[in-house]
Image (cartoon, rainbow, N blue to C red):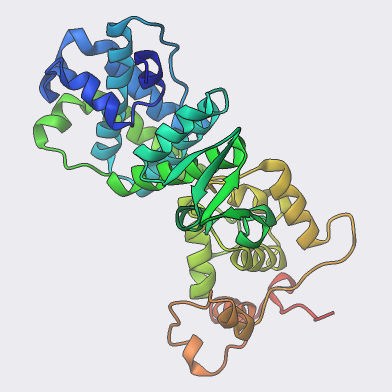
Amino acid sequence: MEINQLARYPFMRSASEFVRKYNVSLEELLSSYFYEESRRRGRQRVLDALEDVKVISNPVGSDEREAMLEILAYPVARILVSCIADDFLIRRYAIAEAKAMNDRLQTEDISILVEVAEDLGVSAHRDDERLSMHFADFLKYTSGLRGKEWKLVNQEVRSGYILLKKDKFARVLEQALAERIEGELPLPVTDDILAMCKADVDELAQKVAQMREKYRSNDFGEISITKFPPCMKKLASMAEKGENMPHAGRFAITTFLFTLGMPVEQIIATFHTSPDFDRSKTEYQVKHITGDGSGKTYTCPECATMRTNGICVDMDELCQSGKIRHPLSYYRIKTMGRRGSPSNAQKEPVKR
C-alpha cells in the first residue's frame, strides 16, 4: 500500500510499521513542537467524531513527512479518547473512524478492500469484479445490522464464501473496525500523559458532557426514567450509548415512549447515536409505529412478549411481585405511588 493510502487507513498495522522507523517516542508525540500538527489533527478527529460521527482526514500526497503527520494523528486521537475514558465517547469515536473508512473504501480498487479486510482479520478474496467474504466473518459482523439484505438466506454463497458488492463489503468492514477500536479503548494512560494532554482533554471532556446532555436517555421532559421498568431502562441506556438495538427493542421503546406522551420528534432523536442511524429511515419507522399519517397505532408489547423476544431483563422486586403484566403497568404503579393517580398518558392502551 502506498504511503498516501496508509494515511487514509492509519489503523492498519502497515501504517504503524511505516511510522516505527522514525522512532517517535510517546513523550515526543505529545509534547514536541515537531508533532504539533499531528496533535492538532488528532484533536480534530475526536471533535469530528463528537459533532458529525465521521472523521475527516486531510488529503495527503506522496510526501512522506506529511503522511507521517497524518498517520500520527490517529494514535493522538486514541490517547485523547483514552484520557477521557467515557463509554459514550469511545463508542462514538469508534463509529466515526469506521464510517470514515467506509467512505474512503468506496473509491478504492477492490485489492485495497481485500488488504484492509485481512488487516481486520476478515477472511476475504477477490472474485472477478466482486468480493468474497467467509460466511463466519459475515455472520459475526452483520448480526446487529437490520434489514433483509443482511440475512444469510438472501446471500449468494460459494464454497463457504459470500459474494458481495463493494458497498456491502465495505459496510461489513465498517462494523469490524468499529468493534475493534471499541474493544481496544481505553488505553492505559499515566499521570504524565494526562498532564501533557490536559488542555485538549479538558476541552473535549466539556464537549462530551454537552453531547451527553443533548442526547441523554432521561431527557424525557415530564416523563421520568426513574419510573421505567428495568427492560425500558436497558433499552433507553442502549439508545444513549449508541449500541445496536434489536428490532423488537426499538419497537418496544418507541411504543412505550409514545404511549407516555413523548413527541415523535423526540423519539426519533433518541436513536441519534445508533451506529446505523439514518434520519429518513428512522423517521419513517417511528411514524409508522406511532400511526402518524395513517391513523393506525401499535401498542407496547406485554411482558410475556418481551420475554419471548429476549428483552425482558434485570427483573426487580416489583416485576416479580405478580402485579406486572405490562411495562406500562409498572410505570403507572410507580407514578401512582408518587402522585396518587396516573395521568391519561400513563394509562395502559386499549388493544386493537
